[in-house]
Length: 452
Image (cartoon, rainbow, N blue to C red):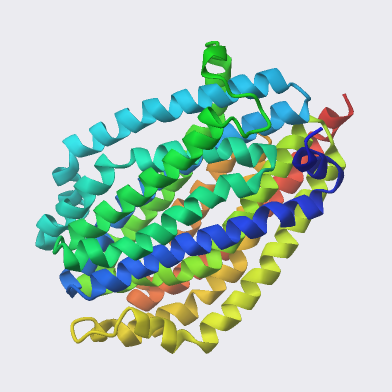
């Protein structure tokens, strides 16, 4: 048996640490890439920063679809491995690759046809040209997001996290290097940031294709000639992938609504502040998300092998580990809020958002600390292949609890933008408690499944 798979079966706690910490490093580098993007764009002018804010919901949807499909592949392949069905796991991997190619054509075409209307409906009227410049390139090159997500999911399901993340690390480093070249030296401005993102993602994709298809360095035997159409495999991938994608759509919808409310409450500067603060908050949410992905992978193997003890251990340990890390990061946010805010408000045109940015960072620390319980519970459902339940939890948190409390604080109590951030904190806290209650109830109700 493969060493990584053996670890997931016999030592779930160590497997979660082994899988999650490299993912955290990788995603922090991706975040660093996003932050540096923001810093370079901030150097252009505040209009470019605002334009990126209006495009953010679209980029969230693109990344969400890629991540969602990857989650579906990861869950199915992991469950097949847990059930010792390696032939099905290999064929599921081939179906995942085929699905990534299909999505890479359909999604960009759909978005590009209606792009201007979408951006105008999001409120980007005053910066529509800048928003169009960035969004059109990013969406046209979204294959460099969809395909790497699916290919890396195959390595993640095997527990080979190094091969899953190294290409993404290389991509991030390349993007950091070429960003200023495209933006300033080649004088492409905001379009340069999008070009750099697509090019670096394409390099990541090429590395993964080489390892998986050409060098054949995966544990599962991936041969394109062995592809045998099995609609049930597509259905199983999509049963998790579609709900997981819609989870990001729910989050993006929430962002759109909050952007609109911010615009109504105070204007475009508050929209810029809101979108900038989430770049910073990602420092806290990324470790939680990565631990959730690791939990999902270990849970998939445990669920496929009907190992209830491993599943329960993975859930509890994932919540504990991610909460400890979230608290540590929250303390750092409070202590160094001034320094974090300065990074995005160092120019004459952006200094006006400095005070509101500091305030937002400090308030949203609560959001980061209460996130782990809900996130790990949600990812546990994904690992078991229960994508619809995972989606319900995300919708209840982002489109019900958070928006209700935002409306109460921001409009009914008339707290303005301050109420938005307080509402997010309360909504996340209640949403996480609700998610924990749901997963505990589900496991108790279905414990007999593991005895059959």
